Image 1 (cartoon, rainbow, N blue to C red):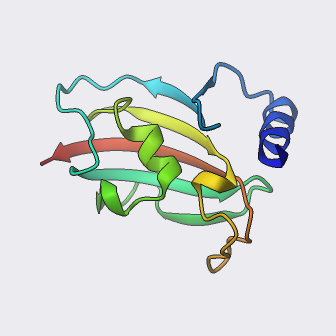
Image 2: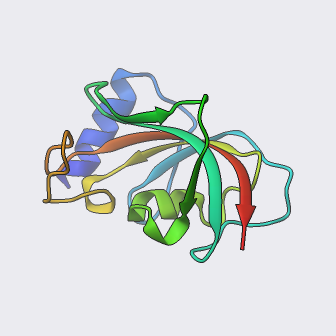
Image 3: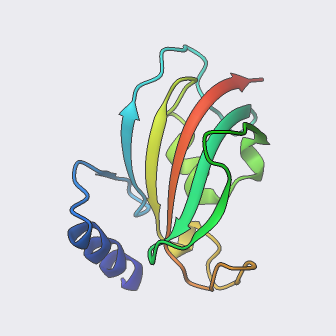
Length: 130
């Protein structure tokens, strides 16, 4: 319940519109629809640029902010990012995600990410490989 309230307040304060909510409470918005036919699945590897930030605008993961491309196994990503990408993104997709703490790091703090933090990610998918 708390995450839902935090997400709703964040969206209202930032006038974030046109986000779709999943049954698990993830919100996502696709800015650019990819043109590839290769869907992202749990067993795929992706190359992408991305940023991750807290709702107070603190960037916690910005090394791949459009200048550098990361190659990542989808099964190694946090649950919220997996849910945002699988079945929704292909190569060429740019997607924004608002992730409740239950789909992020939950009660475990991670370096500069406090426990129970809702997260905001932007992903630009470059390639999807088996």
